[in-house]
Length: 411
Image (tube, rainbow, N blue to C red; front, side, top):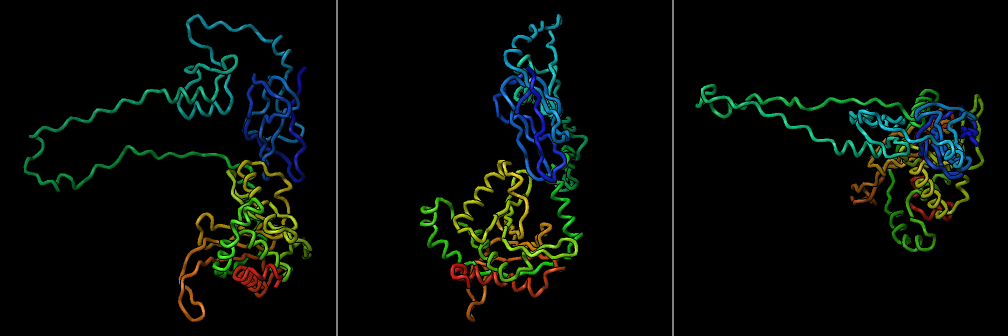
């Protein structure tokens, strides 16, 4: 019995998806609920599990194609039926040349990259199908190109013996062996969506950025004092992000306009604090959401951020993980950034940018001393947030980080 594998119901606001990668090829044995193919949307990567066990008999849509909900992707056949219907092995052609087996898109790309032909490769897959491993093995075994012999050395009569060395080397031979290669690849769905939203933020908001700097020494001393005990008790690493999330929540409560958004001609003031934390993934920057961050302990915050980072690397974040949010924190300091102007994450009205901690000379109580300093940047929508509110909001975060006891005492 044949079973069709179809595109599942897509998340709300997602119209279609792109075939990112097939994990099985025709002829492979498939178990029930085993991941067959990844679908890339402009928000997340969706896994499509097998509806049953059997043999993947046909792939209907190759990698790179756009599909919609309910569209057939592949067909499965029952193992017994596959065995009964299996044709007799083909005899090789009389001239001894191996028959060319069909190849998938990924294998075809590898063949093109290495300048190989399918006729030159003996497939190790079922029915002689060529696999990626076959192409890579053939490419690795290809003989290296023979070196081009050097041109003959001119006779002594052609070069004056008395010519000085400087005269002979004043015009060096240009390097003509370098390649000027180009590679054109389409944007991923996520990268295209990021580009669209960034342009939207710049076109649809009156965006400004205000800056401040924070002395990280008090928070670093607190972290150093309790780090080992914290990790032993809560089984999670104590980082600085929980300090900044808690400081941001405290500041948002004092300045509700920073936690608001614009809807048409209305300002929506949110009575909850869903903080987006930007994390890096192989597909680009994603911003999972800490729901009700005001109700989370430092251990809860660190634990969830660690989980987000792991799932972002594995492309297993769900649509609910990255939807919504009332305020965002981005830490460019982990990549070495000293100062930047973060871009708003619509429809949010503000975003906090953290940067690299750098020891610098500063004046403390009239004396020059070396302190671990960090620049902070707050980009905000000037349509609903005044400059005074933005500056005071950022100063409130600075005060909380420089005196972390204020967070516990809610001062």
